[in-house]
Amino acid sequence: MRQAFTLIEIMIVVVILGLLAALVVPNVIGQSEQAKQKLVCVQMKSLKDALDSFKVQEGSYPTTEEGLQALVKNPDPQKYKSYPQGGFLGSKSVPKDPWGGEYIYVNNDGDIDIISLGADKKEGGKGENRDIKLSECQK
Image (cartoon, rainbow, N blue to C red; front, side, top):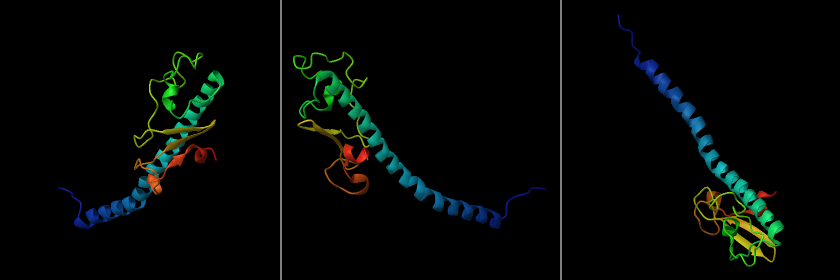
């Protein structure tokens, strides 16, 4: 004798799965974006630490024009004579933000900032498109 599920049993299981999905999916979707924003701060703090090491070793932060690339390749061997052979990041490239954009580095007379333009890679924006600055991450 074959036993099978009745239509009512199958419908009950489908309704239960639908209710679980309705409760779980909205929470999971929001977590992805929050994780990216937290990763931006982690990467920015790591870049700031490398910039601080650069300053200690070379006497000043790289200029805005030299940018974050100065952490992986000596921009001016005449100016930066103590530059370590492997750079300051331990890698051959500057990391990109979680959305694949380049970090923007600004040195305003020793007052530095690092900026991610967010998901839209444009200035301004709200939500996942908002710009994130290093100063926001240090709070």
